[in-house]
Image (cartoon, rainbow, N blue to C red; front, side):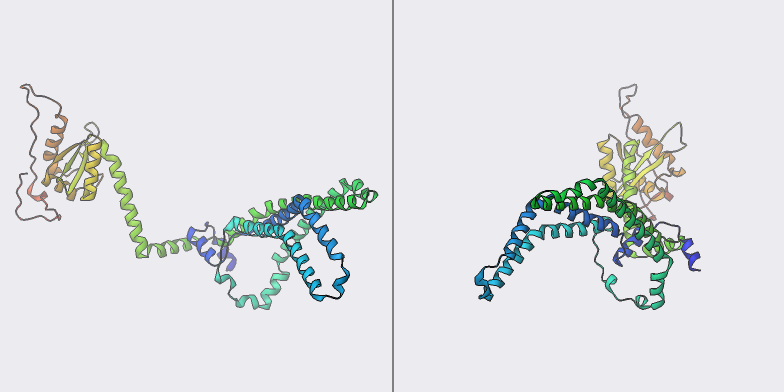
Length: 387
């Protein structure tokens, strides 16, 4: 059953699943990457900073091996000298320690970020189970880890062996020179060899990081049912539903405002309502609502229409009738055909001049009694039909 359940986990983990795992202290980590970063940075620091650290260490050792005669009779002098020598040694190596700490923290947090989780430190009864402990030691995973360790050792030893083989002659000649030169050459050879060997650690890290990422994602994969349950849980929270609805309204309003410049006319209340209409004579049977709004949204529609040269027609009854009977994308109801046709004909003829030189007269469209609404969307018993 456990294997079937694992096989069912075919879906990538959601953002919430990843966040929850992070809260539990489960993040993507690569131990090999950390080892490579720390080892490489420390050896590189020793190799490049040896010109500064070497003389300081030689001087410190020389002072430590030189004991003035009066120190045999003054205990405090010996302790003070020991303290000074210890402090000098610490100051010499502290840059290397600092670099190692930075490399360890940086490489550990580069993949999964910095995480502090109290749950990761909490004691777990499963860790005290001897059967599970034996499985961790002698199980299949332990054998896989043993195989990986042997491969890592072989790679590091192989690169180190190649370095020794290539430099065998120069290594054998180190003892032929003066003692100071021999010591310097030996240190340089050892550090350079160690630095070359870190190439193996880098190769291992380059292989281990994708593998660890694959294992991490595989461990957190979810079933389709888990994703459905998570979505229900998220959407069940009132504040989440409210944010979703607010975002949906914002996106819908933005889309409407983007369509306003293509409108033929915007019919307004004039302040509380605004409805933008478009009528494609050759393609559509009736005018269609492409944007509508109340109060603030109505003001935005009017502002957008003004900025884009769309005609604004004030007709309170017609604006309310369109607002309460039509959704965005719908054709106007048949009862408003005549009133809207008057408005569109007026807009089309605004720039035309009649034969007697008179401009088109602004119409006063009438709305059927059954389509008259007040500002709350109610149908009063008696409302004047004229604007």
